[in-house]
Image 1 (cartoon, rainbow, N blue to C red):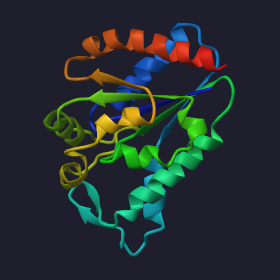
Image 2: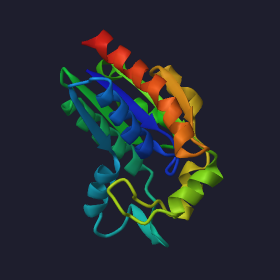
Image 3: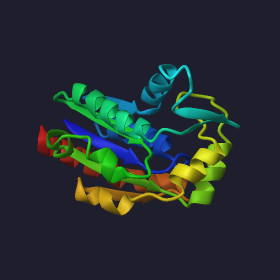
Image 4: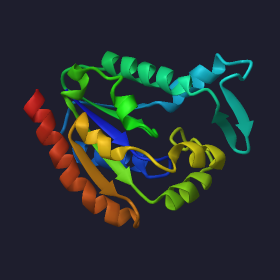
Length: 199
């Protein structure tokens, strides 16, 4: 059992890193289950219940969160979902973006964090903003975050605090897919070593 937290701004390439890692882990002979949890469906569920739109406001390209308690609720729901998925022989990837990773990771119990690794996918804000605004919703991973929300919530974060909670690896994603792919092999090996150490 291992949890891999895929963290970074919207548009940093977390979903691409997941796909490349899953391929590499499978090619290395991993026969267990690989599961991915993305908090976006959980956020949509919160907003479906907010029919009067008291916790968000429409902006071009989507919505902006206006009630900061949404983040606390989202963190709790994500931690609950990940706890439900804990099972021997499984690697759970947990993908999300936050301004405060310390607050988000604080929602997870030590039993989860003690069997986890964080991968922060790093790219400059302007690159993430451009990539994010180019999304067209072609697949489930392509949820657009409006520019106003990007600037308000994701222009800065507390990534330096992640290592207070769990081991951290930073992957730079500023080049092409081939340069990213070269970084995936060593990361996949590290994940498999940690998984074997925990089984």
